[in-house]
Length: 314
Length: 238
Image (spheres, each protein chain N blue to C red):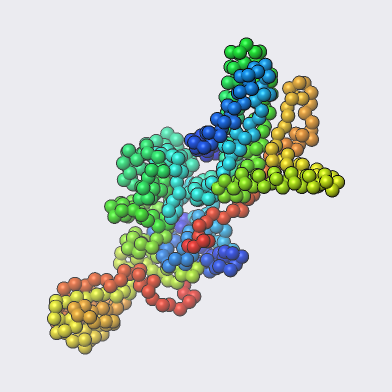
């Protein structure tokens, strides 16, 4: 398999006192965009460190296309952007990309044009190419870091908070670039706290908490996820003219659950996309005037908010 | 060795204002005796030890503390290649300065009417090339152990400790301690005098083996330390 396989990975720090990863197992298919989310200190960066071969697990194994992660053949097709990347500040942007182009063992003939194209690709203007990196802003550093990670069409792309410190236009650009990378068939592993980004980019996501995979979700088109919807009606309807009992009945018919009523809003928990459709139909059928239906929380935010028993899948 | 890494290291070292200042200080200060007494010969230039230290300081440790190493080692570069490239670059940079020093000294001698003894120049360059390789190897080891510019601190600490132990050994008549500490002290500045070879005689085997074993040991240990090192900012809060 050309994908990434993680088997029973355990990693501790401080002579075993801190258990950063606790028996994590995952399979990431080739060409898949996989998100890693979780609260601070959950073990996400440790997991990424093991995937890149920077950290040695206490037990368990990581293979990428059947090889060790620090195998040079894998490194040659890997792109990596760390969180808050430290770049060689004494270089210019163009020099930096040319340097990493050489380190990636890409053909020297294409070095300069490809470095220039990479800069343009992440929206850095030609003037920035010849400017010292120490004069780059946070967002420019992040863009340059991403340009570096995407040099030479990598097959495996590991991104740790790629859009950190990037302006909204940059965030949109990053998303487009990740779509391009995925369309090119690369496997993307994205570690981010920006859940909306993860939701838009990734096919699957793992929720990591206390070193374990607490949940795995499928996000690609057609996938269904339980979530909470906020339904708004005109003033004087929901919570006033429309009684709570009517809302409860509609919810019951749709297989949903009424969570809260606070005029002019009501919050419903639905099991999946089809449940959301059924709920709206049931509300309309019950004569509830609906002006707006919005997710009360992102699909992934739910993972942070739900209490679940320890020792979930993983 | 990785050519891109070697060239980048050289550029990095020669674009640091403080390093350039120190290199100029130790590179051109020895020109003074040549200017005053051109017949003194190339030996008056001293050696390249402090130039090597200026170029070597933080050669690995600064990458460790800044986090650059993660980005670099995500590329198809082995840790051994990384260590050897840094070592080679520092030694090459030091030797380059020594060559310029030698040429400048030769020019001064020629202009002042003193004879330029090219065999002396060759000996000076050969001895300094070996010293540059040796010093860079010691610093590679120390730099792999300490982040930032901690290698200079370690060097100073080992030097002082060796001096104290040597004196203690002599005071207490513990020959083993005095000899061991003396070897440790000399090991911080691995050099090999090729003068006997240049004058048609053999170089002592002990000196050759001692030099080569010091350089090999330092580089081997540096690679070992780097191979065992984990690269992470995760342990301090992921």
